[in-house]
Amino acid sequence: MVVADSDWSAQLEFDCNALPPTQLKNRLHATLAKYALHDMEVSDLFGVRGRQLLRQRCELLPPHTAYATHQLLEQVESLNRQVTGFEHRIKSVLKPTRAIQLLTTMPGVGLTLAVVIALEIGDVTRFPNRREARQLRGVHLPRPRER
Image (cartoon, rainbow, N blue to C red; front, side):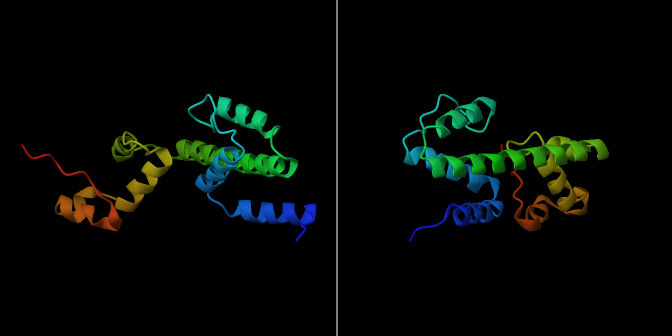
């Protein structure tokens, strides 16, 4: 079956708009791997240098694949800009509490996630013990080491 370019691009845009950032990034990685272009000299393909290299590698792809890859990259960059905008807005209206500051010291927990966790848990003193606190929404707090 032959798909007209306009139908193909409309389908691509529909599909990409519904994808979370991780799936968009996975598709970009998969495209590079499919065409043996995945051996990059950067640790983060989506950092400044990585995106520059990705754009250069797009020139080596077949035309429709290059177009789709550019669209996926634009989606990732758009989502990054939106997240940055939300983070700036959160910083401008929120004074981080001690709990939020502590949460941001955990690996993988930035300001936005720390705020969400803090707001979901609320005041931890309302829990009679650690076990009760851990049971809240599947949050697993580290257990103190026994000596």
